[in-house]
Image 1 (cartoon, helix red, strand yellow):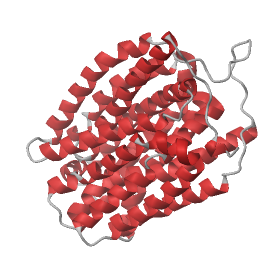
Image 2 (cartoon, helix red, strand yellow):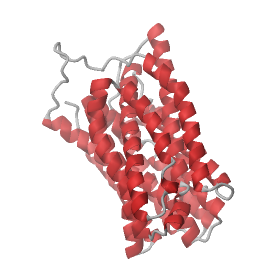
Image 3 (cartoon, helix red, strand yellow):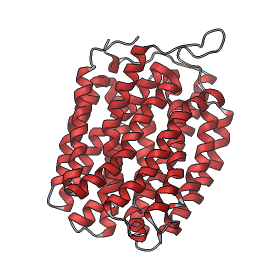
Image 4 (tube, helix red, strand yellow):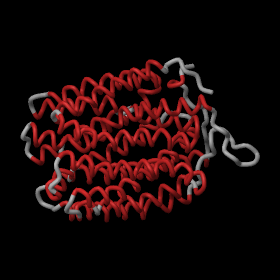
Length: 400
């Protein structure tokens, strides 16, 4: 059976099923919170760029702070999840993330912005690995490919966060806006962290050896995990690029109103939410391979339209098509890596995936200075096509 198409078979009933349902609900809230907080930051990037006097290259370098903080934390979080449990690490990071999002608007230079984004990125990276690790265990326990539903919550949170940002952009300063997000985030965490900590994590799909030590991961498995991480990277690159540069593209290149520009990420996030809400059905009907391949090709076509269209509305349509295409590729990649290697696999694939999401915006900034922003954004289409190609190439790979 093709690797990308293999589904779990574990199921639960009775009280265990009720516990899994509660856990799914709580984790969904955390995914939504993560997207909401991150979107609140990205829609204020144009204002903070102006506040700090940063050029496109300066902003790109500052955004490397998010990348560096997230990637370093992601590499460590897998071990923390094994030691303390993914639920405890998720709750801790859910406190840190809202606190750190209030820091960027307090800066007045590209250097200071980069330093605080290092802290923000660390919290963001830790939360993403921890909650994805918890979700992978739950997917295995449920025996259905429900991973897209969690990422749908992330996208829905992003859509709400960016939509709210567009509404308040003309009325609130970035400082007040992001401080409000901090308060909302801490209140949500106060209500959802206690039940998460009380719920027992599902048992791993494969029991640990008698001594309790993790099973050793073979070279072939590590290679497959890296392949899934590369697929995640190619598609998350596009998500990061649209989050950080879509509003600026509309304002700078198409002279859109700031409110319309701020809604650009909402169009992408809404389409991605719709795609992920239907992702479980799509995966059950098409399988993982065809979902990845068709999604990558759709994302590539959509992004070519979004980056090169001469009008605001065509650009927004292109962003929406891109969101539909990329919607389920990242969840599939992370879930398969976690099924192969547990929290270590999630950490590895997430590091590559979110590394692409966070390293993409600085790369776009440099390419925008060298060429133009529309040309730089076409790199999203290229990498989406690469993800589709990898999906075809690995269609007959077998699990080990």
